[in-house]
Length: 122
Image: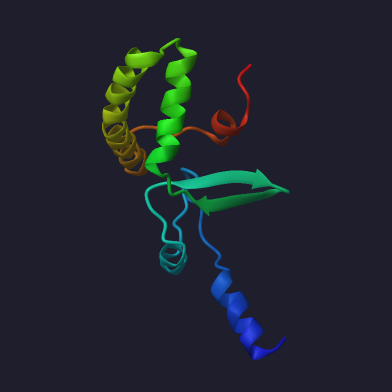
C-alpha cells in the first residue's frame, strides 16, 4: 500500500472505547471535520452503526409542526396561531432535551437501551 493511502486510512479510522453505559466519544478530528453539533443521526446499515451529521434547519421543524397541526384538524387562521405557538416552544424543547442528555452523560438518569430505540413497540 502506498504511503499516502496508508496515511489516509489511518486518518479515517480510529478505535474508540465503549463505556459501560454504551457511550462513545467521537474523536476530535472527526468531530471538527464533520462540523458536528449537539445531535447526530444514527442508523444500522449492513451490520454497521452509521453516525452522520444532523444539521436541522428551521424549515425541517416547520414542516413537521405543520404536518402535526394539520393532522389535529387545524386550518386557516387557527393553524397560523397554533404554528406560532408551537414554533416558539421548539427552543424550550431542545433545551430540555440537552439537559436530559447532560444528565444521562453524568449518570444522573438512565439512558434508553439499544432495544428501546431500534425495536418496534409490542
